[in-house]
Image (tube, rainbow, N blue to C red):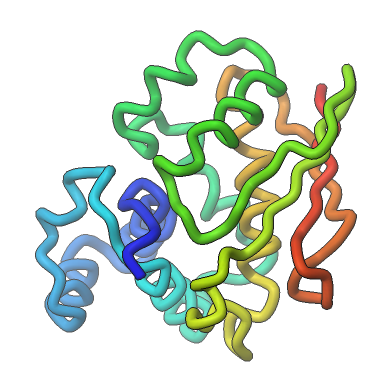
Length: 191
């Protein structure tokens, strides 16, 4: 299932390189039989399993833990993480604009989950993220990953909301797919 884009894997790739170095990254790609040039085109499609495997390996090795998700998602503020999509975000000056724009452009990141803006008020947004049918074939809630993907998406949205310089929005998980719901529902409390 090539339903993710390279830009979705960028935070994981950068985190791996920051902790292990460029040489180990190249070695990892050689073992996985992936050409490093593949990652130069952010719209290239890849399996969601690629980023999940990378995260799983870093979790198993102890360099990726729940308390350092901040380090993983900090690359969200780097315009290079988004490739040409950075032009869409450059002139946005509010958390609301950024989050709504991200949801509108989600297909340029991935097609693994259906993202929906459920409610909007002056001070908050209610967002749902539901796995698409093909995700039944992807092992994204295993013993190693646990609820990692839910926590990662929550932190990603929070950090993304602050690209324009605002403080990150508080994102509260109202429903959790990992804990029995058919989707995750997040309330984004805007600054």
